Image 1: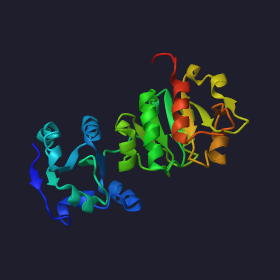
Image 2 (image 1 turned 45 degrees about the vertical axis):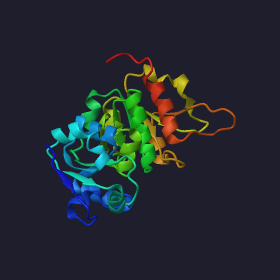
Image 3 (image 1 turned 45 degrees about the horizontal axis):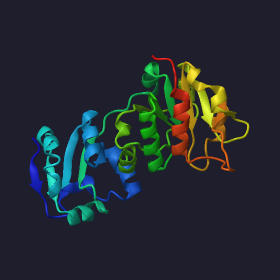
Image 4 (image 1 turned 30 degrees about the horizontal axis):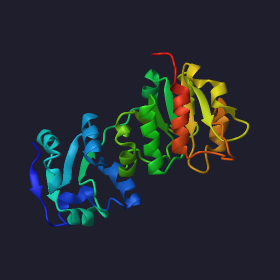
Length: 272
């Protein structure tokens, strides 16, 4: 059972995990190095626990203690109870959901290990917007993608904003980082995947004509907002595919495009 500890000093060292949550660069360095990530909100905290992540501590406003009582009773971690003003001073923002948890990270699987049992994967190149990362993971979970592979420079899926936007879907879809880019794509091809590069380029084939849902194994490649996939990534693909546009719109936000494309590669696919 978690120990309830009331804290009224924002400088208390026990709150270290929760300090400066709005400093993106600091948290990008700190969290992986210290082996932690922050889950925000009741649903996300519960999903992190259900996914097997160990809780280091919780930070709650008093009114959330009863709501989180079952989690508190099960977690062998301290629960720091603070007033909302103190939480804001520690974290740097108004914690309107009233509940934060510091969770321990686990070791990532290798890309090869994920690919052995997967049939539909998404490969992201240089996607550094945490909102887009979270949205893509949420769509991947909802639409039946089996795994996510990240280029070495992609943002951290366990960064607080990504976790929050995904509503905890980052815990549902396994992911790994490719070693080297685009050389790491060779690993994907060696496992029998067709590499489809999603691009608005007019030379790309419409997704419905390619019929990726009929392919045995598909890896859908997505690039960063604005720049899209790099020339090297496009050159490494087996085919270029696009979502047909109307009314003079040239492209969709990468999060929206991902959802459309995931449906195209998963709908009606043969069962495993």
